[in-house]
Length: 295
Image (cartoon, rainbow, N blue to C red; front, side, top):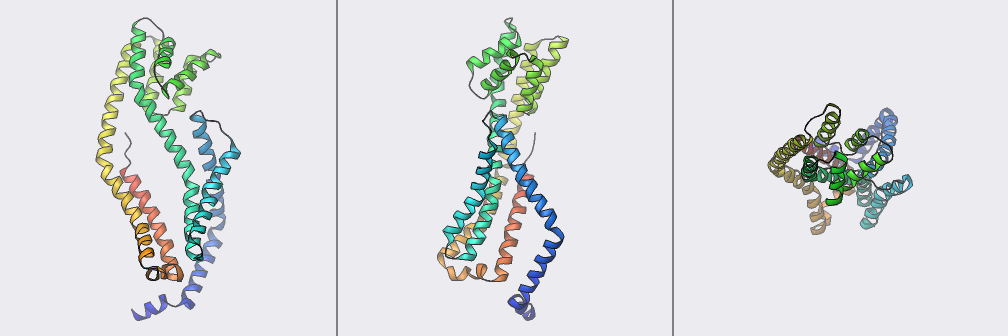
């Protein structure tokens, strides 16, 4: 045990060992890592632009690139300046903030897009009820959809308006509905699109079909809310467990900086910080996969 402590506290042993580990890691994995980083950067940009397009927002590749750079390098530089003059802590916080900031814009736009899709599905209950009443009174699906556009708010109003606009420019109603299903890729929307397209060709009671879809959506929403309530505790536990190490680090640094200084001033401390950050990321991803249940 004494020999192990001596080895761990000896920079003459740890530094060469760490250097060799870095050398072999770069030698064997450098090309794959660079390709991964390059593809990840392009993937993040394309995901952001795709979500912006699906939400009807103006897409500008240069603005998206500036946003990614500002959230990654800008945020990292800000954390580095906040930790100055402690260079080691600044580097650690800057790199961590840059990595997190680079992943932040795609997550934000994906969250905005998912929220929009969820709002659309929630509004479909009222929208399909209005369309069912319109069909019962003798209107066709396009006229009933126009009534929904006039009465209801976004996003269902804007999405249905886009469907009607596409038909006015010469596109068939079936193709416009298929585009709607691509913009809002939810099972309830796919069921709505498929039902209209099939019944327009084969004939059938559209009003009754709309009522059936409304009942299905309501049952699905009940199940989703029940699952959300059951997994809420696990989600909160994951958030707390992920935040505790960082909060304790800040508290220790404020109370007694000399006590936590070896974590940033020694080789072993830096290695443990990197390992801690990696384990935190792995744990957070695993917890998210466990508590995420798709209906």
